[in-house]
Length: 398
Image (cartoon, rainbow, N blue to C red; front, side):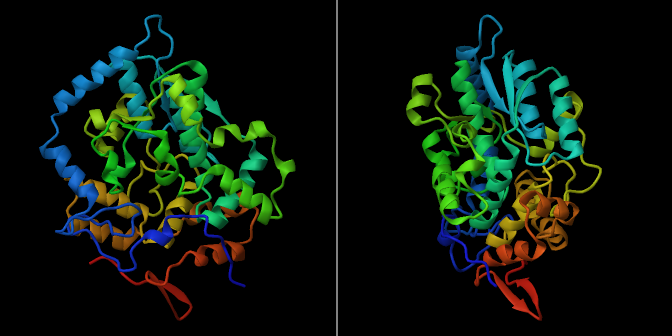
């Protein structure tokens, strides 16, 4: 029986029904919030042009120094919060702030749904490179049920992690009186999304629901689950279990003097490969001995066994996999030609994350049959067709 899902997810209904590829990189117009100019160039490539040819990076660093001078503590207390997975990007930001700019960062970690060995080891190495860390591991029984709800109704079990990853650092900032919260890149700007904040150092919390939470608030999601899912009930959680799944209110943030998400990529030119080299040298970061499924690299998506299913479901929903994302950025960084990127996509794009499939099913407490029923419910007619019992993507890039 086909799985019938809700319309809570607000992104899939807004993408164009005619697929077009960027003429310069390998992203398509199915990416939520993407913009193409009249020449068929995507917002990610236009932002790259702006970074490469218009931004005065020396002036941007002076802006950064001025900002940090305003917030640097005089007594050595924490003066900046850095959300940290232990990955290359957050490690780069925290280490730079501590050792290049003499700040006192507190790294805060919202625990992965299911640690990989290399992910946990890199987090520990990051801490032992000279950084303080606060780790929050939420109610595991409740989170597993939320992950199943997100998988079924949003097409992304990993979304439950995103809720905490975005929200938890701001609660800690409010509680500790730290006004500065620094993330790595502006993902919308760097990966071809909404360019509205591409030239801004801060994204306000008013944008989080649309740009990070798929257009639905945590309370709306939870309310739907309580009314429609027999595996979820009020007995599964206390109110205290819910706090870190949604950001503090705008009133709370304003009272605390917190403007929103500051982006290190606004001040320092963002190159993921260079971040990797930096943390490998300074933070003891190790790449995965195995290639990340769905792409060609060994240093991305290392932290969580569930991460590969986020990218696989995104490929099903939008035709946008991890390889496309990585290759698109590397085209803009001058590390790949479009032809090389297309060849890599032909080999790895949409690859099923088989390595942790058993753990994924066990974590959500679902059968393999149910998994595929849910996955197939997200296949849009303009992207997919079934031939001889096999789903085929209609528009392979050429």
